[in-house]
Length: 210
Image (cartoon, rainbow, N blue to C red; front, side, top):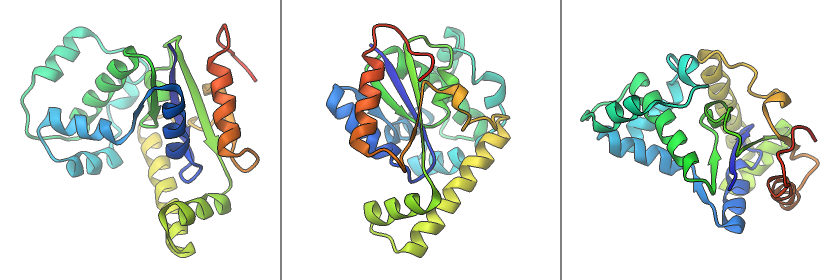
């Protein structure tokens, strides 16, 4: 069965859509549980993983487009750490996303999954975009924020996203060529986006352009 990755501009509804898709299709939704699993493997707190995640970069460029070899998996998963840094985080992240994808029936939100699974034939990569004002409005409604608070959250998350991909040498993250489907959420409802993705993955053969 297909694997779905969802990349998004923050506030465009990626988490909400991912959860909706996973529920409708009977898939696993992989998001914060990736952070939790990395924390368990590294024997550190989820908060520590999240702080490292926001700054991760370095080694990602070199390994992100490759499937992880079994010796690397064995080395990482057998290691006893109680510590995590950028290098360790990236190792765990690539291993976990690759392993999650091998299980099929999963929707993966962000974390460079469109790059890690770029060569996986069964993976469908989705990008959600929207204008700034709509994204601010979405955060206000979804998380009960004031307009000023929501605007600040969107700006901070946009900056983090830009800095992360800049560090890993992947500044093309919003280019449509990377994805099977790019959805402008300013023109499409969540229900319509859901239906488009379901229709895409149920095609008898992969769709290369829409």
